[in-house]
Length: 312
Image 1 (cartoon, helix red, strand yellow):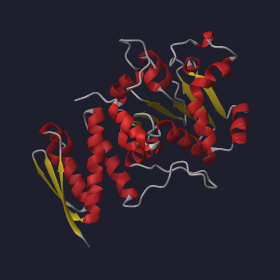
Image 2 (spheres, one colour; image 1 turned 90 degrees about the vertical axis):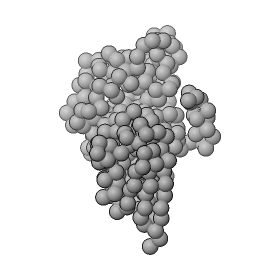
Image 3 (tube, one colour; image 1 turned 180 degrees about the horizontal axis):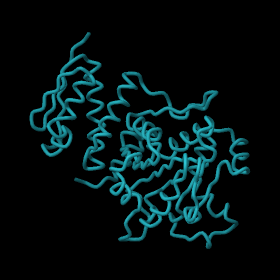
Image 4 (cartoon, helix red, strand yellow; image 1 turned 30 degrees about the vertical axis):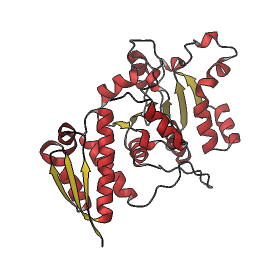
């Protein structure tokens, strides 16, 4: 078995303190999970052990640093979840998301996406923040479809705030469906990729799949359903509270969004940002942060996202 030694240079001692955890608890978890020797000296981390174990340890560290950059802290559950995901994936490359086989299955293609999928299974409410192309909407929709097929949910409810163009629904032409379809196109695209178009049409006609603007959620209780709110960064705080309190029995909710693409009026705080901070320590609520390393669109998308990031 090949032995390896790898040195990971962190950005600062502050990052190191947050990464290592109180009394180096996170480093001990790495050591115990992969059977490696972990040596911390200030902002330098050295990992020694079997080459494959060192690789897996570095992947965990990379994911934890990504969470730190997005959230500013690490929750113990995030460390445990990341370890479990990478232990489960091992050294095998993930299979394609939404591969068009006979079962129309889906698999995460990055460690971040794998954390997201695990959070969807483990929590009743999952909040996912990440840039364009990271599979936020696609994976949530794919998860919902698998829940429908398995009989774990009776309905799929797809919701989006209609604010991107600064227009109110009443000013748009057509009936309600025609008004909201442009806003919900990404959800339709995901559905048609995961299911036969005829089945999607049948489910829409029988209300197994319901598509609605956020404003139409008020006063409802959604039981036995998977409910997805896309573009959650475009909700206000009262709207987000209204949406999350629609959660009924035997249901799951997913909120996705990209906080760098907030289309709310100036000085209005995003309901998704607010929810992340309010709910992060509540049991059965999962908060997942994806970044440019999780982008699975054209390779140029990673570079474009990086080019638009604020300069340090």
